[in-house]
Amino acid sequence: MVSPKYSLVVPVYNEEKNILELYRRVSAVGEQLDGAIELIFVNDGSRDRTLQIVRDLHQNDPRVSYLSLARNFGHQIAVTAGLNFARGEVAIVMDADLQDPPELIVEMVSKWQNGFQVVYAQRTQRQKESWFKRGTAYIFYRLLQHLADVDIPTDTGDFCLIDRQVLDILNAMPERNRYMRGLRAWIGFRQTSVQFDRPPRFAGKVNYTFGKSLALALNGLVSFSKVPLRLSTYVGLFAAAIAVLMALLVLYWRLFVPQSPLTGFTMILVAIFFLGAVQLVSIGILGEYVGRIYEEVKGRPIYTLAEVGGFSSHADFKQKLGSRGEES
Ligand code: UDP
Ligand code: MG
Image 1 (cartoon, rainbow, N blue to C red):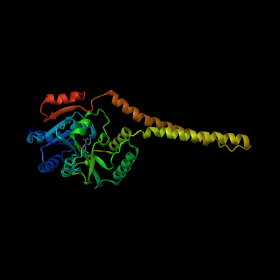
Image 2 (image 1 turned 30 degrees about the vertical axis):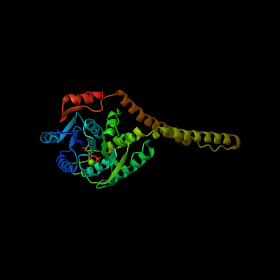
Image 3 (image 1 turned 30 degrees about the horizontal axis):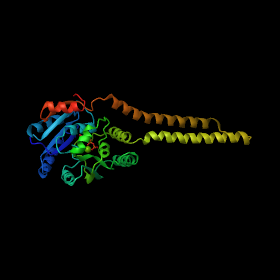
């Protein structure tokens, strides 16, 4: 196989109904590009026929290769694995459900040819997504933009093009909690966007449950902002100020008001509950950060591979894992 210029990385989790259509549309886009493409599917522990379909594609088309993770590791990790193995001059990350239209790649590539090293797709509209999902996404992206240390563009997902220079840096980043769009923004270099309307899923159902989305959002916030930690300091200061005020008030009543207007239990209960809540929330926030530190120091591999197809030699792949200090 000629060494590819464009590596397309597609994480797949129970996407049996989408893969062939994706393959068809990607092949058509490949015709319009000025270099060879490779299509890397990363099977993220699917329970349907996804892996079988991907294997068949690989048998019939040398441009298709695949990695199969040993269990479901989640979208961000699947993308990480695919990027680790990408051989092209640029890598393009896209979803398997055709919500990231392959045709947009042509526009992304032309931006790359104009000197941009990261081109991310920014959605202007989301079709057929519930108001709840749109609403929470809207709030989250704005919140993240305010709180994060780096400027993470709003309404971007993982659909993007990454140049080799940036890709090598991204691959060398050892962190386990991989919020890809944050890492991508953090790296820097010349970045730009292309706009698109996000179409609904081609087939199958959404794998990102509310729980998974929330976990991803939390991960993004905690990995890229220390504001939540500072929050407990602020609330603590606020509580301290109130305490001083109350002490002064009590002193005043004692000394100058004969019929003390102190209102017994309710006041005390409210104060206890308020402080208890503040402390619990603070410990919770602390826990989020400590938990992540714990995960990072354990130094486990980010993923484990059960099967690979299409990577030239086993040694090559071993060495790749070895250089990241991992075993499969
Ligand atoms: N995906 C994955 N592992 C998971 C969940 C999803 O690899 O645990 C893949 C999925 O196959 C798809 C992409 O991530 O290619 C985005 O998933 P989905 O369409 O369910 O989410 P959304 O469109 O809401 O971002
Ligand atoms: Mg989708």
